Each structure stands twice: as C-alpha cells, then as structure tokens.
Image (tube, helix red, strand yellow):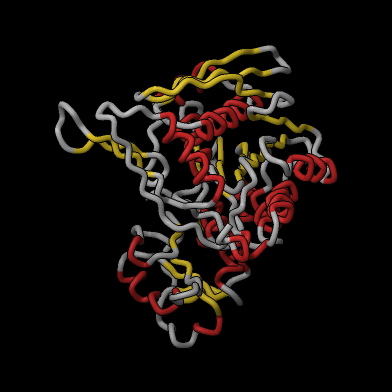
Length: 385
C-alpha cells in the first residue's frame, strides 16, 4: 500500500487531534463510505441530503485507517480512529493546500458554462502521454469537489488538471486561490445558472474569478466566441496576468479555428496559431464546433507547456466522448445500425445550441433523424424565452 500522506502530515496541516489511530500513513482520501479503499482517510462532510458523520463507522469497517471529523461529533464517535478538527470540510481544504504546496506539477484549471469536463478529460488523455497526470473525476468541481480532487493529488504528479464550476458569484475565487493554477481556460460564457446570477455579464464576471489564483507569470486561455469577451479580457488585465491567449472561430483570435468538416465518422478541424504561423489539422471522432473549440484549447495548453504538438494531435484523434457528453452508440441491426448520440449530461442554451448544430450536420443513411430534448433549468425569469 503506497502512501499518499503520512498521518503526521495530516495532523500538522489540519491542526487536528488524533484519537485511536494505529496507522502511520493513508493511501487515499474519500468522502463516500461505500467507495473506501483499504488504508484510506474518510472525510465526514455534511452535504445537502446526508451528513458524512453518520457513516464514519461504516467507513472504518470498510477499511479506512482513520476519519477526519468535526469536533462536535467527536464524543459520539469516541473509540474510533479519528482526526478531530473544528470543521471537516475546512480540514479537507487544509489537506488540499498541503497537496498544492508540496508539488512541482504544472497545474491547469478549467471553467466555463459548458465544455469544462470534456476539455478536462481531453487534457488528461493528452498529458498522460507526457508524464504522471492527475485530474478531477466526473464533475467534482464545487466547494467540496475541488479540495477533494486537489487533496488526492500525489506529491510527484507532473501535470494536474482541475475543473472549477460555480452557481453563484464569489464561488470560484477561493477555489482558484486554493488550486493556484499555472494555466487557466475559460471555455465559454452562456446562460447557465442565469436564475442565480441574473445576466450573462454577471456570469462572465463569475467565471473570470478563476484569474484570482492564477500564477502572474502564467497563461490565461480565453474563448472569445461570445459577446462577453471584453469582460473576460479586462478581468485578466485587472488581475495583472502577463500572458493571455484567445481562441475560437473569431477572426481576431490568437489561435483561430479556420475550418471544420464533419462526416459520419467524426470531424476534421483546421487550427491556425497566429503567433507562430503554425497550422494544425485535428482529426477527431467527436461531432460539433464545440468539440473543435475544446481541442483547440487543449492544444494551446500543450504549446504553452512546450510539449510535442504532434503527439497531442494523435491523442486527440483517439479520444472517445464520455457518457452524456457526445458518446456514440450503434443500436439494432449490425449491418444497418441506428446511431445514438448521448448529450444528456446537462442542458443550457449554449449546450443545446451546439447539440442542435451538430445534429443538423449529421446525415442519416435511412433518411430519418430524431431529436429528443429535455428541460433547461436554472434560467429564472428567462425560462420561457
């Protein structure tokens, strides 16, 4: 069992009090007692529906070496191996800061109204070809997901990729300051969480909070195919970011997508790096202009890290879309199958628009195409529109 942390490191980082702990190391960190690995540290977080303190004994029984718990629950959990702190979530944040402080990894943080997870997964698959890579799982991008993902990062990681989301103003700033990225990406601005934020301008300002923790000598990568581009650029300037690279279909982009061609097998996209006069052709099994934009953002990261672009292009060609984010399934008769494209993960006006655009470009051998649409939520007063 390899060590993620020494128990003493955890105690020092959190200022916690150890009780009944025999183990010297912990091998992993989890907030789910059902997914505990042997030797793990279980962190008892209070969520909207469940309180993790109710499952501490289950976690220990399932193999956890210790549990990080809030002091108000210490008495009822006495006898179990515990690290007692004032607040378990704050304790997890302390471990996350320790993880960031001890690593020399290049850190990339991704935000945006859509495309965060797809871009993060694309980067993960590319960077795994170049070194030890750690990335957020699923959509663990909120106030507990980000510190959990950061805390899980091993000391000798070479590349770390973190997805940072929000549904209200002020949420991204502390997360960005915790992650302290060397490179940030804003994939787009759209009417997601409009109910809470009220306008696209406010959404842009909330996404621009990702610059709060960005290394001043680092790079901000911004998609400018939206009307709020000036807000993002001004926010980067206000944050005193030394290097800003824009991308998109916009002809004023530093890295421009100049053409895409879509077929039943996937898509070809031509990308032009205006600074270096380099032209690159991306071949991907994905559909849609938004996937070309995600791939372009990933290539800029590879360029900024001074890694092999051609190797990255090859990795992109092998990328398979994940469940709910463009995954393709062949159904029925093997000789004349139906193609199902699953874009069911989430819906906002932008993600719906790009899904419709991609659908429109697809040809159907049978002459029939069927579109099934779900609800778009959190749009507030603009829902009907």
